[in-house]
Image 1 (cartoon, rainbow, N blue to C red):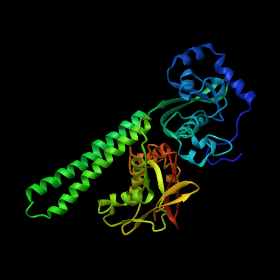
Image 2 (spheres, rainbow, N blue to C red; image 1 turned 120 degrees about the horizontal axis):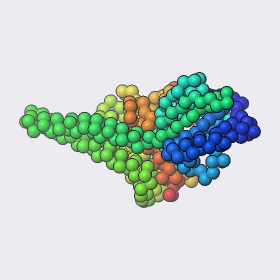
Image 3 (cartoon, rainbow, N blue to C red; image 1 turned 30 degrees about the vertical axis):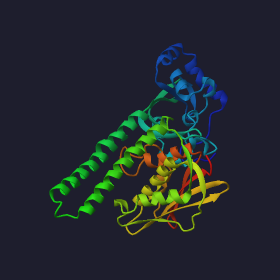
Image 4 (cartoon, one colour; image 1 turned 30 degrees about the horizontal axis):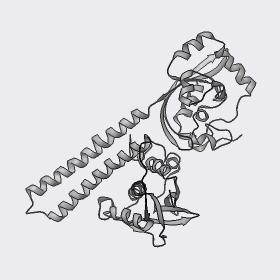
Length: 373
C-alpha cells in the first residue's frame, strides 16, 4: 500500500493477538496500568494498538477495549485525516504535521519523544490539543512503543486568552488611551474629527474581538444559542463590507462586493453568519498586499447559498494542511482561532467552510449554508 508519510501496512490479527497476550497475561501490568488515570497505549511496530488501559478506553468513548485493538491512535480517536488514505492513520499528507505520529516514529528509532498534536475528530470536527509521550519498549525481544496522551485543550485555551487579552487587547487599550490623552491636551491643534474617528475605530475593534471570543467560547461549550431570522444576502454582505470601510485594515486596500452576486432571501442566524464573514474578510485583508482588493460575493447552488471571499494571495501547502486546526496560526505563537472558529460556527448553521488556492487565481474561502436553517 502507498503512503504520504508514515509506513503503510498492518500486522495480521494473529500477530496482534500474540502481542497483546504479553500484556494482558501479565497480572502486574494489568493491575498497575489499570489503576493509572492517564491515557496509556502500547503500539506495535505497525503503530497498531495491542494494549490500552481503562483511562484510554474512557478517553476514546468506546465501551469495549477489544474494539480498539489493532487500530492506530488516530483511528481510535476518529481523526478526520485517518480516513483520507486506504491505510489509515499516519499515511495521509496532513499526517506530516501530526505531533502524535512524529512522537511514535521517533520512539521506533529508539528515542523517547514528547510532542504536541492538533486533531480534528468526528463528523463535527471537534478540536483536540494533545500532548504525546512516546517511549521505546522491548518485550520478549520485540519492539513496542508505550504511549501516554494528555488532553491540553484547556492549557492551550488559557494561553490563547492570555495572548489576546493580556497582549493584543492591552496594546489596543494603551493606544486608545494615548489618542484620548492627545485629544484632551491638543484639541485646539489637532483634527478632532479624525482623532474621534480613530478612537471610534479602535473601540469597535475591541468590542469585535471580545464578542468574537465570547461567541467562540459558547460554541465550543455547546451553549451558543442559534437564533434564525430572515434577511437577504445583499444585506449581510453590505453590512460586512461597511464594517471594514475606512478602517486600519483597508487603509491601502479595498473590500468590494462582487457585482455578479445573487440576491437570495435566507433564514439563518445573522450574528453567526456575520461573524464568519467578518473573519473571512479580515483574514483576506491580512493576506492582501498594499493596493490589493478583497472581493465578497454569493450565489445560490442547489437550494444552498455559497458566500465567497477572494483575495489574490496564495496559501503554501504546509499551511493548507493545518489551516483549520484549532491552535494553528501563521501569525505567531498561541493564536489560530480564526479559521478554526469559522469552521466551528459554520457547523451551527448546518454549513461548511472550505477554500481553494493557487498562485494563478489567488485564494477563495467559501461558506456554504442552507437557505433555511
